[in-house]
Image (tube, rainbow, N blue to C red; front, side, top):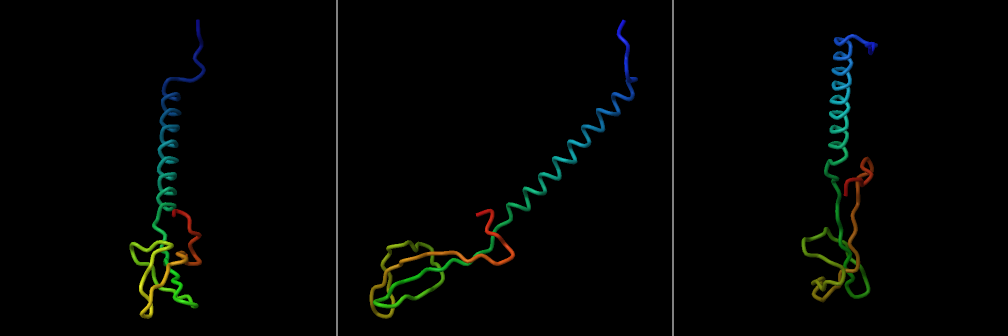
Amino acid sequence: MATNLMPDWMQSLLLLLFIGLAIALAIQQARELKKMQLPVKKKVYTIIKCGDKEETREFHEGDYVGKKVECNDETGLITKIYAVYPENQSGSGR
């Protein structure tokens, strides 16, 4: 004969408590993941070498390192592209 350590109603109560805890933890984790996936606001700049000097301008779609562009009535060359992140954002989520 097997003895029952807990009454059936207590087993049901414990099961409900564990399920409730699991749901609460899943909701909390979903909120944390959503915070981590917020878009990062950044400024992207392009450096163009024009003759013996360099100019910096905002990134234009289609820019790439090595691309020839017009600058000061001559042909310039894109040498660098970089992003600047605000200080309060670490750049995570890139």
